[in-house]
Length: 132
Ligand SMILES: [Zn+2]
Image (cartoon, rainbow, N blue to C red):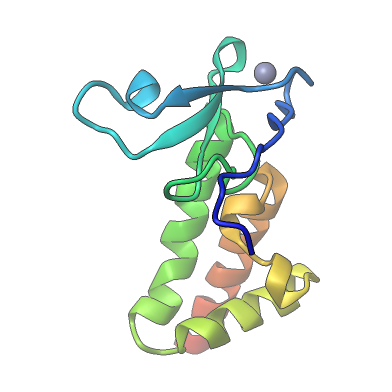
């Protein structure tokens, strides 16, 4: 494997179908909050972070609605494994089964708004069953 930085094509904004532009994370988070590079579509207020030290996007560009949906999905799902009731890997396997996804494709960072809603639904269902 070459250690040379590979050229990464600009991801296409899923909202306006235009290529995103690379920007520092301070462009959206403000000065002093540098988390590395992001891909940004300013007209859509949509962005995605890059894997550390690379230009590879961590998922799709997310607008405000999707960012908030992902926060809700994590808030519903993370306690399943953070509480120790499931191992983290088991929890993702369980989620993948309920989402009809392959375990490798099961990342909340890659989900759309509908999938995030489904995460909240299945996690609520799981908690209800345990409480019963
Ligand atoms: Zn856009």
